[in-house]
Image (cartoon, helix red, strand yellow):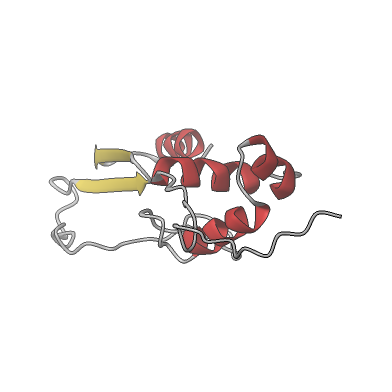
Length: 128
């Protein structure tokens, strides 16, 4: 029988914690939000604990990972209304509108009077 009566003295009280960059966290959250994804498998494949990935998902949903929460339970995207565009005038010949769509790092600006089919094509491409 091996008995050791000397106390174990550790110089590091808590050990070394890895600091993961935001891009890494966002990438794992994106992978975990895909339909049919296994958080445990994603965490194991990337060398982190599954509980950590769930924690990052909560932070992402709260918008605390540096980007606004785009995945919400109601399926809606956040919309910001800006008052920089003047109100439309009664003169339809000179009326020019501006539509600005921002989704993450993608920004689409449409000027003039686009018809409904043009807007439908733009929205179809942007929201894919």
